[in-house]
Image 1: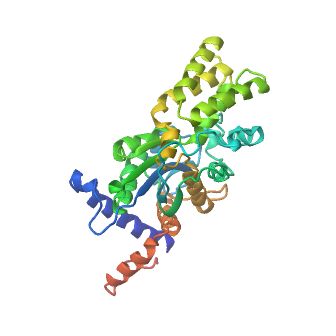
Image 2: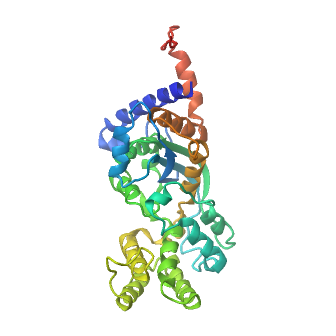
Length: 371
C-alpha cells in the first residue's frame, strides 16, 4: 500500500512539475495566484544514501546514471534531498558578529568537526557513512550571545532518486508553489558539490549563493595544519578562519598560494593525504567558491551561513530508508522517498492528497489482487 500510494504521489508531483515547466518564464519567477511570498526564503539540497537491489532488472538504467555521477559500490546509491525553509531574521546596518565565535576556535571542537566531515574519505567509503552530528554548525552559532542567526519558521522537503539534472525542476517547482521566487530575500545554501551549484545556476540564479561555512572551515583547517606541528598550524588556522569569517577569503587564498609555492606542486605519486595534495585541493576549493563566501555581508542581511539544516534533513530521510539491512527496488525507493518528504514537510501535503483522492474516486478499484 505504501508503494502504491507513494507512486500516486510521485505521479501527482510529475504533473505539477510539467505544469510548472509549461509556464512562461515571467510566471515561473512570480508567486502563484493566491500565494503570499515570504520575506526570507532559503533553499538547499544534498545527497543521501540508500541501498538498491532490484531483482527484476529494473535498476540497470538507474545504476548507469549513478555511475555517470561518479558513484561506486555494489548496492549503495544516492538519493537527492531538497529543503525549502521560510525563516525570520533581522537585517543590520553592519555585521552583527564581526568576531568569530569561540566555538570555531576551540581545538577540541574543530578536530571533531573535521573528523565528522570526512573531507579525506574516498567516495566508496563515504557512500555508507554519514555525519553523526549534522546540526553541529547550527548549535555552534546558536551559542554565540551577540548574534541571533535566522530562525526557521516552516520547512518543506523534496526527496527523489532521479538524476541531478531532473531533480532541479522538482525543487524549483516546490519553491515556486510556495512563492519563493517572489520573496524579499532569497538564499541558496549548500556545500561545495558541483551537483548542488549546477541546480543553483539553472534554477535558482536569482537567489544569493552561500557556501556552507562549516565545509569552508574544514578545508581551511586541513590546509593550515598540513605539514606543520599542530601548535603552529593551529595558530595559522585561527588567523585564516578569522579572515574567512569576515568574508576576506582573498587573504586566505593568497596565503595558500604562498604555501603551495613552499611545498611545491603535487605529483601523481602523492597520496590524497599528502600535504601538497591537501593544500592544492583546499586552494582550488576556496578559489571556486570565493564568490559564495561573503559571510559578513550575509550576516548583515540576516541570511544563514550554514547548510546544517540540509544535512539534518538528509539524516531524517536516512532514518527511514538507509541501513545495511535495507534494500529497495527503484520503484519502492522512489515511492518511499516521496512519502517521507510528505511526512517531514510541515504543511501536511498528504491531507490535501487524501481529500482530493476521495473526491475523485469512481467506486471502482483501480487495481486487482494478484491471483
